[in-house]
Length: 148
Image (cartoon, rainbow, N blue to C red; front, top):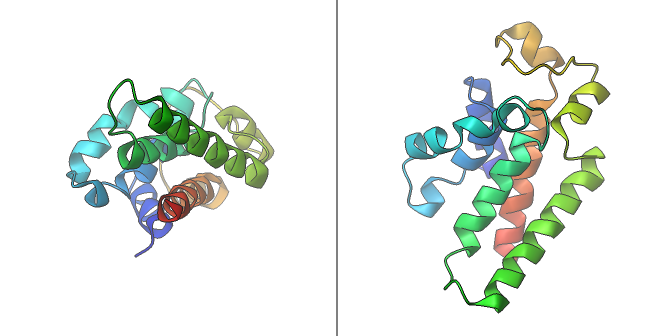
């Protein structure tokens, strides 16, 4: 199963956007998905419901860090490469959706951004665009990892 498909599955189970995106990479990193879901819990809702940086993007950056971030602290070349990959991934997401800001993404879809999590039901999933974001973020990270 592709990372994007896994991310959508997690999202449709009720996990937030950051949890869903990151957890789709857990097994690749040798991590327990439950641990990743716990680690990423506060990043949903545009980071804790602030509706700032999209949680799917946060999960994407986390996945890239897991894949490329195990370098010595003074290895500026490796750090530079990771940062470049993160920037390019964020740029790709922005090119696709116009922004990485949760609030703006929701407003574009006609959803009212609020700090509290919404109840997950059929109406939520029919209107909310977030499944598209987690799928795209996971696929962007996956494709960039394969290029390395």
